[in-house]
Image (tube, rainbow over all chains, first blue to last red; front, side, top):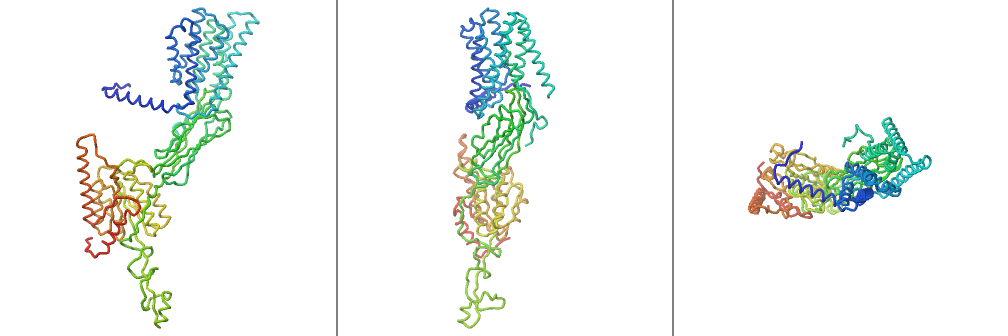
Length: 198
Length: 440
């Protein structure tokens, strides 16, 4: 049940307490978690601008929205904002290529894929690190190495598979659905395996 | 501390795992519906990340051990604590976060921040913390807490806790010295020279041998010269009993630890420790009594072992902070020696404490009151125009109480460490030597 404050003094007191808590949190923020959160936010801004249609990118408020969303990812890595930003990137990408008929060269696709995954892993790491933690350098290097390896493997396999399929059978609209169905099947197998082990 | 997660010790998926599955599923469905291969490229790292992260799933929680300095320390001295966290699993931990908060008066450097590091399978790492204990008392470090993250941030363990590690911090000993003699000596051994003849080391004179004298007391030189047996007469060495009454009904002032201001309780505890150490070192017997709602008492004893008992006892002293004074039947003084020195350490904050001191003095005991209130820290309440006036009235009332105590024969002295009791002990000694009509 939400309690409605009954006086201006109570509201002001609550605001003062919140301000004090925020300023204390800012003062105590350690470099390690701040770096991880900053990287997650920066990748979010970059991928939003990379995926957005060109007419949108030329408008200043698009940059503003991207920065606000990037800041939200950095400040609230445990929230649903990260999921929304990742899905928003997909929507922006589809809008750019379907609605605005912009060309989607392979380098641009790889750049978007390379920028969207660190948003996810950066937020995952930031979510488990307390903002004032002293972080050993090995944590950050391990995180960067894992992200790079998965990214290289995932994008490489996907791009290679698509290129191979198009070379072997020529480009067909059926290739993507087949690959998607394979991905869903693999996902189902993983989930079933997880449920079975628990 | 009991682990609140004891019944649910397990690894749980993080929000990142849910996000990866949702993103992969949504992009795959859209790819199928729209026939877009590019969405598969976007979704592939998410799917591969889940598969890679869950290839080896951890089952064991991080093991945690917290140790700290076992031997008691004196306030101001360094304390060391160590948190060891181990990974007994076959799966490496991407991140393990450890924290151990100490109690308020233990200032372990960097203990206010958690530590995050990686931990390979079968390995252990330690976090060493050190810092000074700022105030006497029973303190602690911990409980330590640790949780681990594995599978590329997809799985997180429930936190593991340790028990707290207790630390005993003894009060710093104020330098104390009382050169004056005790007003009364009671026992048969000790260092105080008595006025009675008896077994001892202090020569009182030479007298003729009498039945009952020990042969080893014969002074052969005088005997040979006088051709009659003479013995050396000595004064007996006596010990004394010192009873320390700690008035902890109220706490006053704000303690700043060993390097800051001293509250009334700090002064009481540090002064009691110093006085006890001084008299125990001289061979006297010392007892302690806590004047509060729950009267506690440490029996009279002497020696080094008793000093350790005094230190342990004094760590349990707590201010009761009640509104009313303890009822008189709780503290009627029957535990106090009738012929010993009674030292009352009191902030004299209420009339009941002064009444207790006066009652002891009227019962014929030799009582010394030590004022433990830090008067320099006493500042008037400035927010009201009436504050300084009220403070002045209170101060005059307190001065009046101290004057009344002096009228009934209780010297009141401010605690000032070395030699601060010499002049009052001299007064009490002279008072004890003088003939008087006692009313018991």
